Image 1 (tube, rainbow, N blue to C red):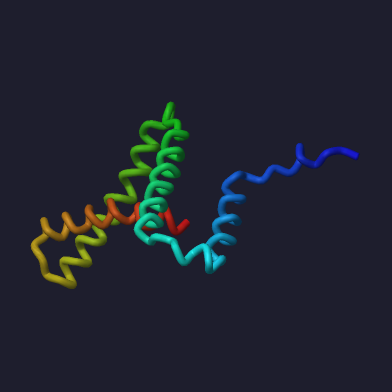
Image 2: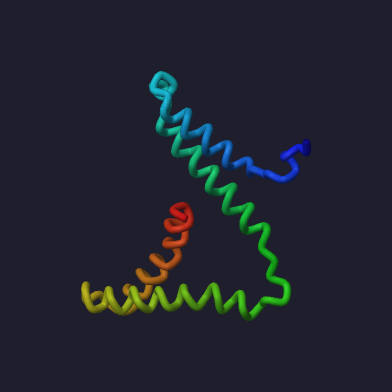
Length: 115
């Protein structure tokens, strides 16, 4: 009989997620849980995950494509937010564009953890 360890590979993160779900549901263990540490650990894990993902990128031979795929959506989102905020809030246009670029820069940080 062959060993199935060669064929079935479970990523280590799956084990961590399962252990976290089990540990979170043990009430006597969670009574002494500090929410401040939880926030710090979550943010540190997010930084590590995003850094590891960013270090694996390779842009060789993809210069113009990479620039267009990063700047295109950012500029479109900034223009859309600027025009909507100009119509809704009647702010000066330079403040509307500042708002658009701030929201455009912050939205990936909000959406990436949700995915």
